[in-house]
Length: 172
Image (tube, rainbow, N blue to C red):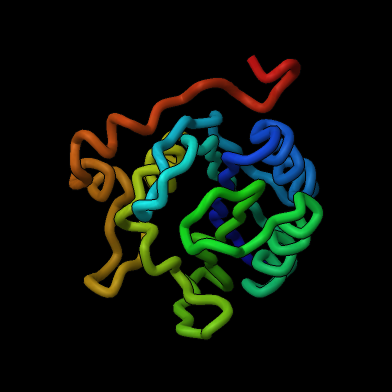
């Protein structure tokens, strides 16, 4: 059994439909999903704002399963990897995984856990905090409360991440 936190984002095509595909793709293991947040792009590439969600899933799988399932959903959305941090139909990241009560720490070329930049990204932390107010994230400096990480972000970056709806009904 493992419990994972996933982050999904889209800014090409129909972002709400792409995010809905992630929720549907993990539906059997879904514990919680955040509201949809509008977030400015990260990484310096000129592009449209993203729509992002954070999910918590739980199931009888290892960490690699969550990654491979995310890749399947990206391929179904015709994701291309032309520009690092560039526009995309769908991006599904594994933020952190806990197995047998412990956090998985891995430095594999295909799967680095916890995600090496999660503690710096408002578009991951703010939606995560919404669905797990007591969440913690392992960092090389030790385990940190997600609430503390959010509080430590640049105010302008944190405030630029705001909810715009939910993936229910007509995407209100």
